[in-house]
Length: 160
Ligand code: SME
Image (cartoon, rainbow, N blue to C red; front, side, top):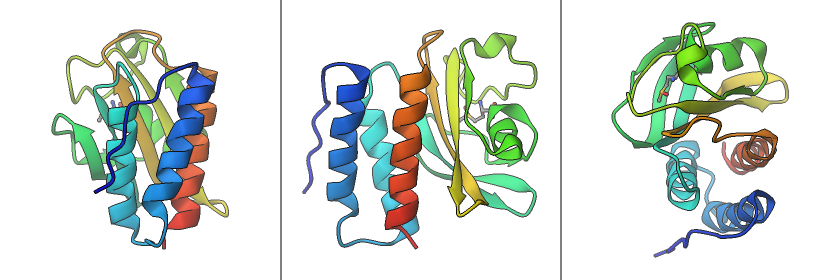
């Protein structure tokens, strides 16, 4: 079985390593749920200081919980609500350095202090979002956004 090790180094180096590991996991497999489950596990295990990592998929006007790692989470989020729904509505990544200051934040795990959400877009069509939470304030920055956007794009390219 594939045994991922937690990469070390700068954020750029860590995301580069996660990309290599993701490519390995996706090789020869195009099932979207299986690949999402493995990517959530890879990100959760590969990044320090992250207490939730996973997917929400767009179904009608709602985001519905998909594969994830972390505490059980709210299942349905209307587009436009919370950090996830905001990223989905804007179709762009949202970084929240302090969730207690984001009006409308939906608290699934009370330990969460900061969050990043990246939309999943296939040729302009919204499929859902990739969401990460951290128990530390200011955990996520531009390097995380860029690294996660590439991982999200890899998942989209590799999955049906
Ligand atoms: N905090 C998110 C909800 C999802 S959980 O963090 C897993 C939000 O405000 O959309």
